Length: 216
Image 1 (tube, rainbow, N blue to C red):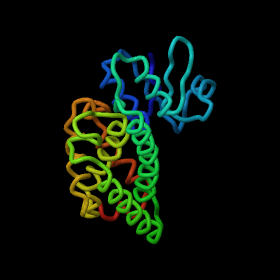
Image 2: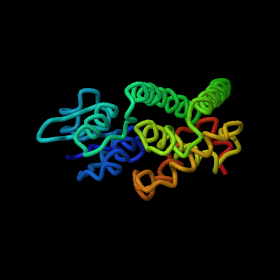
Image 3: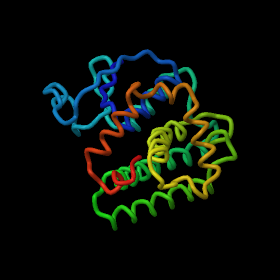
Image 4: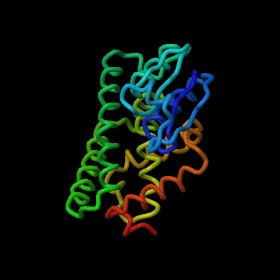
């Protein structure tokens, strides 16, 4: 299997985490999304990453890729109970909203929209704090797809928390503890390139958004 990737893409990171959790063999091919190769444009229906090439077939959309990987593995990253599986899938989709809000607050150059995005993101975290387990993971002791979905968010959030005074973890002790557990997990730590923090900071600075004024 070959995963087509972009070094800063959180959706690619989800797939990498699942690959590593299942200990599946794969190659990874990083491209420049600002100037993608012609072969990528030919095989990507949406022009986005990740793509997963399997036996000359191409899978797209991170959720589809993650579900496929889970189905071919020897075990599963879903809870055993069907209702809990469905609930978990819902929160995986909720993670997409969180990522979009985090991207807006990280890149907008409009002060009002920035403040709205910060407030919205904090609301997302408060909602999460009311539904997750007491830990260490979303569903107690089992690392699941929900954990794989939120780990990329927390990795970016930890860097923003380190570089700014936004305090996006305030008032959400369970989410804060969950984030720490995920970021200490081997599959998460090795789901990005070594230079990820540097690349992420350069991306933030290049957008010249409101957040850049508070970077230290």
